[in-house]
Image (cartoon, rainbow, N blue to C red; front, side, top):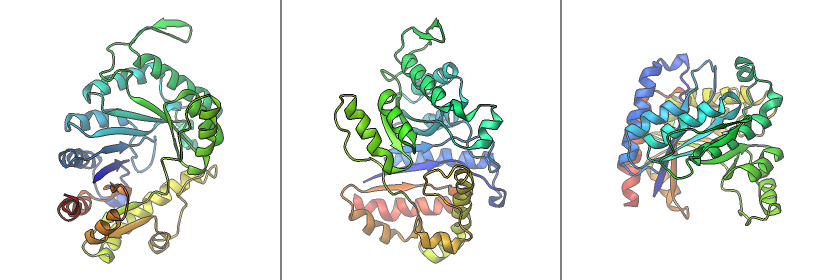
Amino acid sequence: MHFGLHFDFRNPEFAQTSTADRYAAALDMAQWADGLGCTTITVAEHHGSADGYLPSPVPMLAAMAARTTTVRFTIAALIASFHDPLRLAEDLIVLDNLSRGRVDLVVAAGYVREEFALFDVPMKERPRRVTEVVSTLKAAFAGEPFDYRGRRVHLTPAPFRPGGPSISLGGSSEAAARRAARIADGFVPTDPRVWEFYRDEVQRLGRPDPGSSPTGATGTVALAKDPEQGWRELGPYFLHHTNAYGAWQAQDDIASPYRSVPDVDTLRSAGRFRVLTPDQYVEELKAKPVPFAHFHPLCGGIPAELAWSSLRLFEHEVLPAFA
């Protein structure tokens, strides 16, 4: 039995939670999860969001790494377009050492127009910036001098993990899929349909067939003794999460499971968000060839006490069924 956590730290005003308290709760949850054998903790990155979406995943993972010993961390996604490649490489090398090699990266180009305006970055530069960031990180993680913008540079110290964090690309287009095959260690598609472009490009480059897409339909599960009460408490946060992403992704009609919806009832009927009893979740997990539970405990600004209620049910009533 494996499980993972995801955090993006949205904190809308109606949640009535300070950002500092939300961060502290997530650090406690990371330590709790690590003690129970959590497989992976994922954090994300966005900038200038009205609800405080996490803009700086590296220091957040540094804090989590200091509170944990075995869980692996993923930044999904790190938005290459807004980072100085050398400074980013240095920060990630330090994080790799702090975590003793427990970090993996999913690098993406970004898509939110307001973010590109914030950093005064033309959106047309996204492919070039992604390529430069990935090539710089790979060279820096090798621990040797390398050529960078026409000069010879050498970043120190070396990563803890030989070769540094793994680097996959994220994306939802054919161009992103084929770019991932050429420059990255893997591909994490936002839209599983573009996986076949990645697969085709990998084989065209003479490498082994990577097989079927590692990602599929995703959803968010929370646990409650009474799912109806759970929906009354959690539904507004699920709705905020969905509509905040929906507003961003509607700008360019990005392939995504998120589309804005008018109310909680409509969201619930779509089935992407579910509130289950522990027994229901045990039954569902046992039907899977490889049981994996995934939680977004603070989704959409869920207050810590509600998040802990779901996580404790998992700890005390779901995990023991797989002992």
